[in-house]
View (cartoon, rainbow, N blue to C red):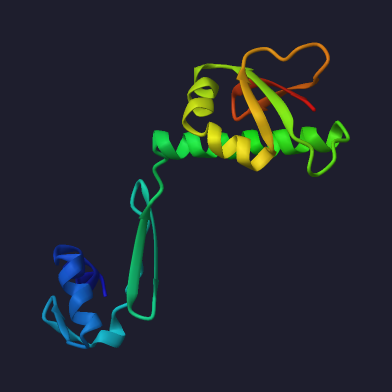
Length: 153
């Protein structure tokens, strides 16, 4: 078994996997192994997640691109604004003005995803800056990004 394990380690994994998938025997350290003798397992590689089933293997990247991070921040802003609408007692159809004050990431997201934020929260005016005193205001920590949000009918 030790000789077979060492022999398998010397072979190209892709070639062994292809032979097993096609139902061909593989010769390792002078021993003929049948496809049933070899167990194939998908392993996650740094930066990817993989899964195998029914002879197919799929791998997807787990890297968070700046665009994806911005989209996530926009969705989190929408969720927090919706929560604040409920806390303030607004009706479901009330149109609101929303203020957001935060770091550069927040500013960038307000520009790039502002239309989405306005549509999802029924915001007629999305203002970058500190909310006024008469608005319903709360400070939020969004994965290390501090943002002050204010909503008003």
